[in-house]
Length: 262
Image 1 (spheres, rainbow, N blue to C red):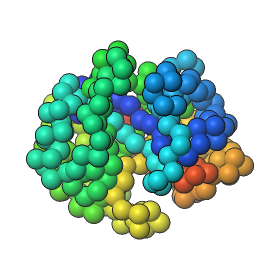
Image 2: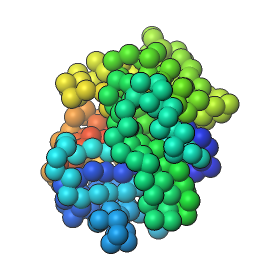
Image 3: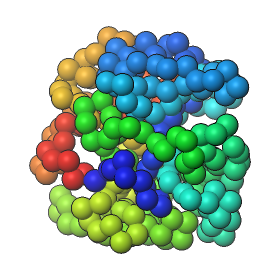
């Protein structure tokens, strides 16, 4: 399960690239009860979503050259070494490593299939302050055309342990930090064609936020101008979940988990 005891390769931050921070704050504030804390002006308008005073993730407005999206960051103790590992595994660097004041160092990538992800080397800013609770991140899922190749890529970059577990008459591939075991799993890796609606836009990471009532969350998302990509559905041992796009098209999912083990 996700944890704020960050280790190499574990998720330690998420953020939203959006055309309008103000509109994103209105949508996600109405949906999850998040507040927004503007960052230092030197960071160009970047700020943080908070819930009950704890940081959930970030947002950067004014992004108009790409389709809005949520990005996941994975912990590293050496951003430069992570860049080399990504390039050595046939991924591509999009930016960085860059210093973010005294907060830490960051770099952004495309994995070998083209899915975006980022890495965060913490200094003053360790990462998000809450996970697995209502209104916070609880799981991530990579949609990719080649599950074994994706597993090999992230193992080469971060040393992830990969396990295939029986699920719904087939198997589900889960990732955890090196040596963490299945109980430390934080993500799934699934075939891209499992989500035909999104497959046309290429491989991507989908973030899941825990909620108390997915049906009520979906109704609120509709009222606030979001699009429902998957109506609420229940899966035994997983929970009740739905997939949503915000008014600008950034995709995410919500879930009321059956347990907090993913």
